Length: 589
Ligand SMILES: Nc1ncnc2c1ncn2[C@@H]1O[C@H](COP(=O)(O)OP(=O)(O)OP(=O)(O)O)[C@@H](O)[C@H]1O
Ligand SMILES: [Mg+2]
Image 1 (cartoon, rainbow, N blue to C red):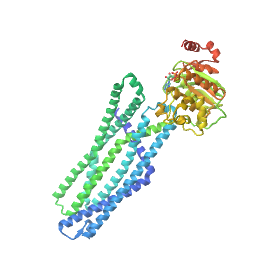
Image 2: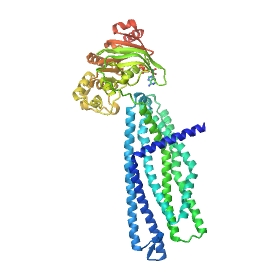
Image 3: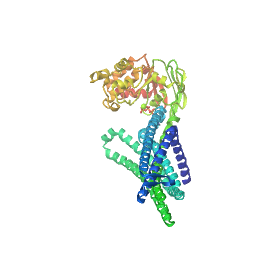
């Protein structure tokens, strides 16, 4: 069991490491630039430290000339001028590196967000519907932030590593034996801290999972605000969310302790090694004070780069699970792309469902052997008990899901071969619970589509019986409807959705319970509107109200996933008990 977990952990790690490398590879040139600038900065700093040490030793010795390591000597004013130049070189090198790394992070952020948004929007409806709410926001915000932070950390790590290497080489030039001892110390310290790094990876995995759970909890609370208030269960939700908050914070704390603690442990270990080295130098009575003090300064500074390097490694290890989550999501979105056929039949009619079977992934059969055919301009009603499969048929008609058996043909062409953009223009939809975007009524009717002129918007509003409302609004069609249309009533939102559907002049209009949220008066108006569209569009109308389906040419009754009857309204009472009972029930009302 443990071996299996370890093997999985190893595979996960290598895939997230691959993900990190894939993100850096397109920026190779920037990385090389970063390395060169870091080297420049480090060289300036090394020269400066050596020179300052030599100046201090010369000052203590009372001499005019400043003799440096490698036997080079300068007069004191020359040494001061050179130190100034080296300081400028160091500053320019480091600032240049900062500039390059900031540019790198900005372009990685843009690219990552674009890629995630694109892959999510292009994936199939089935994947979008199945992905838990809150997950996308979390991936898009905090997970992508972690990803770019990791790239930034790699950039800092490169700076630190190059600088460390430059300092170690300088140390070898000054005193090879002591420098070798320090390098050995660096490697040993890294080895000693190995188990801590592995612990960090486990904690980071846990942290990423806790963050996703927390985001899902937040999304749930956001969506259930009204129900919570009405049922008075705020405190139960506070407690539930509180558990997720604490879980996420604990996971964060446990990860941060290691991310921030590891570099300190590393540095303390190195200090200990250095102390040991100095003790040995004392015992061996090392006699060159200039070499010894230069070396000590170089090594002290190199340790701070070593600490930065260790800190970068710890941050990268802590962030890898977040990168893997982003990659897993993108892979899932890309693998399940919505089908993209190219066929553009002359018209949608005839629209034929032929022996259609359907089961949701991992679920039981919802539809079996559904066969219906729609002629151009026909109005077909679909009725049936709750859970019978009406909305499932709608999703198939819209090409959002593919049948598991049988064929659905559009204008004689199988639905999976049809061009989706063409289909979107030809088949419009009014959902059971329409959603509006934060914009005006006009924006919501246009819904980002090209070619929907103001005249078309106004005409659609007239048909959807919206004009009375629009004329009362301060800015007419341009009145802001609030976030998600929150300033409109359920019935008004429904009518905006109807106007949206007909504004594009589609050939087929599919409506899933369009009158469920409407008062009797508005229902009559919508029924009249649909009647006015008769002959102009083919209409598929799902409704619970028998009065609504009264305008249909034919009504199909669906029970337990099969069509139990399909007749003209006048003849259906004979053919369907369900219809008869429903008519009787609505007459009683
Ligand atoms: N996304 C889904 N995943 C799994 N099962 C689903 C999903 N959506 C619906 N179902 C199941 O499929 C069956 C048919 O659901 P559907 O939404 O088509 O019913 P409906 O006839 O539209 O009902 P209603 O009148 O209540 O809207 C139900 O048993 C439901 O539980
Ligand atoms: Mg439904």
